[in-house]
Image 1 (cartoon, rainbow, N blue to C red):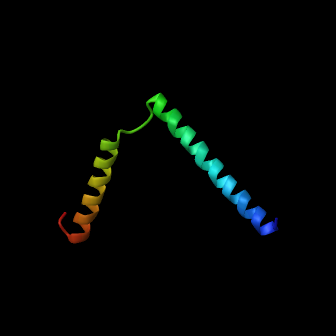
Image 2 (image 1 turned 30 degrees about the vertical axis):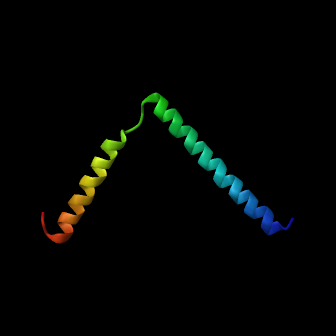
Image 3 (image 1 turned 180 degrees about the vertical axis):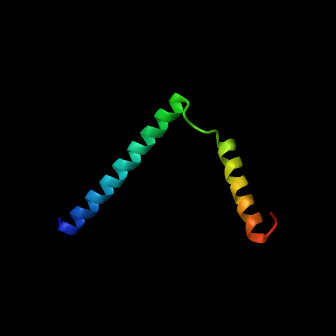
Amino acid sequence: MTTGHTNRIRVSVDWETKMIEGIKRGIADAKAGSVVPHEAAMAEIDAVIEAVEAERTGKV
């Protein structure tokens, strides 16, 4: 196995480990009730988009 191949494997494993840790944190947050419902998050995102579009088009 070449050094380059070994490094690519190490980078891949590190990235996947970080992804798994993030998923575990998300599951723990969900179990603790520390999450924002999808509908609320989308409503906030939509409001920000609408405000930026209104400012950009001069419809403030």
